[in-house]
Amino acid sequence: MNHPSHVVSGITGLVANRCFNFSAGPAMLPQDVMLRMQEEFLHYQQCGASVMEISHRGETFMALAEKAEHDLRALMDVPDDYAVIFSHGGATHQAAFLALNLTAPTDKAGYVINGHWSDKAHKQAVPYCDAQVLDNTVDIDYQDIRLDVFERLDPSLAYVHITSNETIHGVQYQQAPQTGDVPLIADMCSDILSRPLDVRDYGMIYAGAQKNIGSAGLSIAIIRRDLLERQPRPIADVLNYAKQAERDSMVNTPPTHGWYVAGKVFEWLREQGGVKAMHEINQRKAKQLYETIDCSGGFYRNHIATHVRSIMNVPFQLPNQTLTDLFLAQAAEHGMVGLKGHRAVGGVRASIYNAMPESGVVCLRDFMKTFQQTHG
Ligand SMILES: *Cc1c(COP(=O)(O)O)cnc(C)c1O
Image (cartoon, helix red, strand yellow):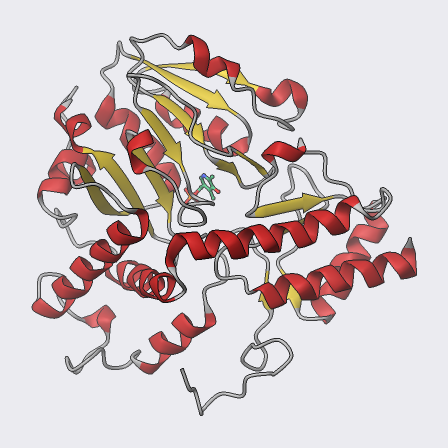
């Protein structure tokens, strides 16, 4: 694409004054997507108004909504017997909705806790069912994932819940654990669309949009349709997955702008070659950073077991807080922002979702090396 109204730097590939934004979420969006949205900000296609100003039931929006769902289904190869719901709220809403929709108060549901977000998902379910913690790796500071818990599952569980990528700790399942007849539910907030997967391994996948999909306020749920038939308790239509699926996510006004942004990102992902191509890039990006950490002689440290290190969020520690603060300040001066680690773990965290270009990671890698040479 040509964007004559913008000066794009040849070194970073970024429009002037834009930084490489390593924020964990809301996170960086692909620059090309932003520029396209800017072009049509005041009048979307031929409708004479912004996409934010038009009826969700009108032809223009309905076409956009359908295309977004179509593109998502194509990207993830979502089978027809799975519903896709575009919903208000974040991943935490979904964590509550799913317990509300898929369990009766006396049902047991299993939670495997590998970090902050799986713990929070469990807490959302506690009011609605017998939400059992099957394993909690807090005893090893969330530095590894224990898979043996999946070998002895109680077959009467309503589902098993995991968080496929723990955004704060940087620990990630390498593949879907096998759960037999117990439906597996995964919070994929921070790694959806980052790598190929088989949707059939899951009863449900969900994510808030603001990390690897689009902007905050929208969340997406992909649910196997047989689970929608459970109807374990009376649920208001607006919170009811079955009703939302039946009414194409339009029980009420959906988050139209968020849906539009997501659609733009899906289009962009398909142009990039889809999830498989993104995965190759994502693996290369993560490798650059982990190699720099591992070859730093202990100046930079990441404690996660190497086989479960996240390719989306790379947290690392420096020798002390003074150096950490200096690192963050100097990185910002070099056009790299959003690197501060979550307050729960401190240090530095580089979130390198699909939208982070390889040039951003190379820039960070080179900065890390120079910083170590000066201060190591
Ligand atoms: C960010 C995040 C959440 C929380 O998302 P909200 O949209 O703020 O509710 C949940 N799970 C994971 C894995 C996350 O990264």
